[in-house]
Amino acid sequence: MAIAADGSARAAAQRLHLTQPAASMALSELERHLGVALFARENRRLRLNERGREMLPLAQEVLDRLQEIQRCGSSQPQQLSGELRIGASNTVGNYLVGELLADFVRVHDRVAVRLRVDNTDTIVAAVRKHELDMGCVEGQVADADMDVRPWRHDALAVCARPDHPLAQMQSLTSHDFAQAGWILREQGSATRAQTERALAALPPGKTVLELGQIEAIKQAVIAGLGIACLPEEALGDAVQTGRLVVLPTPFLNLRRRLSLVLSREKYHGALVEALLASLQSQAQ
Image (cartoon, rainbow, N blue to C red; front, side, top):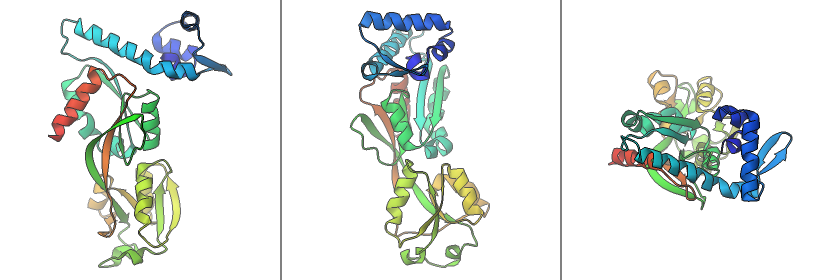
């Protein structure tokens, strides 16, 4: 598992506090015992081959179940410990992480939560490859290998600088957005996908910039480089201080669902179940 995650016996050895020869020998012994190679050797890197990818979720399940056995056999089986690897898309990771994790962390203070923030496509891919135990993403997830569960809703909003021509108009129609200059998220972002669906209901505009972070887009809009469609949660401070305004767009459907994603192939131990229970209780 460590070699699959790090791509080399040297890095895996450091992670596991072993010598590199010991890690290499352990891998060789495992492959000899199974009678099959698990990794392709490429320029001093070790990459899982097809058989290795098939066995990866089984290996992870062995480790997770061993952790469960150790917990059940301890003097305090109700007390959870270990590491929980969570992925979050940019909106969730940057603006809703408190709602996602605060209750769980307060109750289970011996669990180390590792949070990875990236765009939706990257987080879903990491859950599929068992690099993450669970993801929380915005937008649609069409993947038969994923167990997708609704979490909550949020909405996007079109924002502009207060002195932008569209911000000076008392009421707006879709036609007022003709030739508007838009600042968009990068491809692979759920915000980008929903923005494109919304813009399809408007007259053609032009893409001024593509940026990978919401905060960078906010600063570009504040600088007067264009308008943007961003999560409402990300706009509060800039709107309150008068640096941005939200344009009224009742003719656009900007509501969306945030979802929890888990791999259908992966065993979900007590830590994942406890987080799911925490979120369900929060929703109720």
